[in-house]
Image 1 (cartoon, protein in one colour):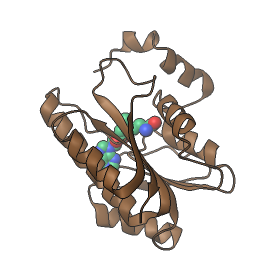
Image 2 (spheres, rainbow, N blue to C red; image 1 turned 90 degrees about the vertical axis):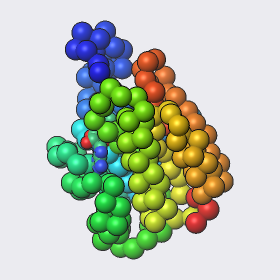
Image 3 (cartoon, rainbow, N blue to C red; image 1 turned 135 degrees about the horizontal axis):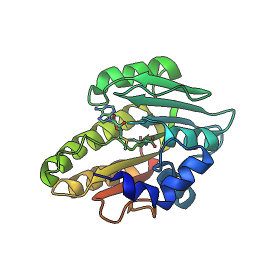
Length: 201
Ligand SMILES: C[S@@+](CC[C@H](N)C(=O)[O-])C[C@H]1O[C@@H](n2cnc3c(N)ncnc32)[C@H](O)[C@@H]1O
């Protein structure tokens, strides 16, 4: 749990406020995108677990005017210019796939799937890890249904017993897989991002 007092001294929180990002997590995606070049101008990007919308703002900036960003979350996301917002549960995978398919007119039309989805933390590390694993697995299943060949994937997972299993499934589906902790991830956090490049289709 992050205390209000910690936020006040957090440099990424301060930068997010200053630069107009809705979350300090925006810097995590900026760092991932810079290092792994997963999003380019003109791409169609699906952002899973997107509220309040920091990653979607970053993705929209990277894809530019020709690109499309579709953002999905259980919670309401305030409108973001030129971003399509879907209120939904990503663990209802078929529903989510169908809603996105209807927007992009079919499968194989998505270039990148990113997921920063997290469960509400209970404080029980094993339980939180398992729920994070379930969300990451849903993100990977949605990506597998929608990504075009050679598309890219980024998903957060909390470290724990099922981490290796998740990493292996990304490795199986993509030509290149890496785990990465951006500088904006808090030191005490168990989160790690798994990056998959070059979806095998
Ligand atoms: C850390 S926040 C995402 C922050 C976001 N990347 C940003 O930069 O603003 C995690 C989000 O995952 C969402 N989430 C958790 N479970 C979900 C589910 N089953 N379906 C959709 N979204 C979910 C939460 O509602 C929350 O908004």
